[in-house]
Length: 253
Length: 330
Ligand SMILES: Nc1ncnc2c1ncn2[C@@H]1O[C@H](COP(=O)(O)OP(=O)(O)O)[C@@H](O)[C@H]1O
Ligand SMILES: [Mg+2]
Image (tube, rainbow over all chains, first blue to last red):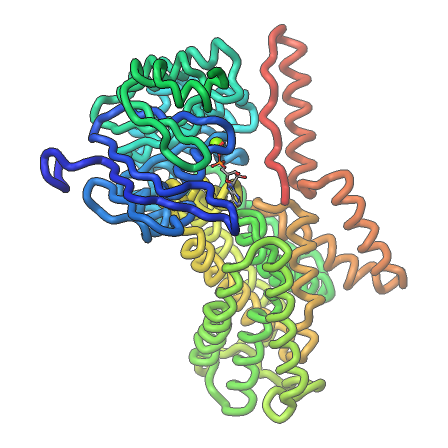
């Protein structure tokens, strides 16, 4: 694997702050994620978790602070350029291409980092190698049987799985998963958390998750965000015993 | 080797090619108008049906190329072999400039394109010393290459038919390509596409220019048919009509805009001859379409066929799967 020294971080945030008018949604967050790490971000509603993800993936720029991705300063890069560097994401509320079919969704995900997205003279259905990547991504999220179905016919759970497949199909170096289990039935949560557990080791995973069972089972490191600030960073064992975390997060003193 | 969809289009063109064999000049001339305006509607639908952008300035590209050809030929005696590429170039150049409108979305995009369209109309109307003002440019010569001249309506009909068929086949390749798929992806969710590495602005800009080029081509076909051009060609009214054609026939399809063109052109050119309220009728047809067939004529046919297929299936099978839903329209 190229880029960066052997022990360089996958993600390094220094003093990242995001203001919306007078509201400081993300407040001076510094954080390091090792390559291949499973890092879980938790915190009560409105803590600024999604906003932090948006700063990292490039939906908008941070008001101040620096974001380094495998030693590249991406703080002021456009979203598409960050995607091309290997930043993949999913959305808290599933964000898939609802008017298209499952396979069309995935072909677009594969072509996102490929010059062939400008090709005008050949049917997209004839791009041979693309089909393999599509198949792999679908198999990973266990949606193979839905390949040719319109997304409109998918359940919400299946759409969240497809959302994940889209991020995977772009062959990212790091995945940012925003509450992949939110809004799912218990059996679906089980399936999705299993899928995430089986993701290839070389992909760095940063995940926002409310379900403590799922979060602590998958996590190697945990960061707790509260009112935009990091109030805890450590191992899953430590987080359960940390008194400050118990106060703000579990609501018990 | 062309496959089924392309063969269908060629078959339809072959059917249209028989019109001069049994119909008189009035109908041949009406069919030319249907084809040319249908091509304009198809160019509008690249943006509307695929990219999800409703443009109301396409008459500007149509008129720009028509005026360029007319002025070059009539004023400066430039031969057709040079006037036509110049007309296409000017129309496309205008699209390169107007393409900035893809920085806006929704109602703002519609408003910006309306404003741009009015700028061009205003110029054709007010810059009378150059454009001929209200009178426009008359006496455009017949299309000619060297000594070879096309003076008969029927001969020109076949030229138009061939050019439109060529355009339609190229268009079909375009919308089936990765580029076309990207446009539909952007229509569905720009935020998702951006996070997958796409730049909506770049793809939409290129689509806008390609669409403007097609509209210019329609303008060139039009000027050699009409042989005069005036500000009415650049009017908002034409832009709206092109959009109505696409919606009436079915957006995101190829035959749809042409079917819409058939309906509107027959109303405007034939029904108007014996029914003075044809405009009112046109309004009613449009309202009925939007209310009862939001996917246009093609959508109506498709859902009717799907229903028939389902009925056939339920009679010989017990368990049936739900049918694919039609694509939602903007
Ligand atoms: N685009 C935005 N504009 C203005 N305020 C925003 C925007 N996005 C988020 N916020 C605000 O920032 C705060 C953090 O929101 P969010 O990051 O979504 O929290 P979380 O994901 O932790 O629940 C909330 O108060 C929210 O209202
Ligand atoms: Mg959130």
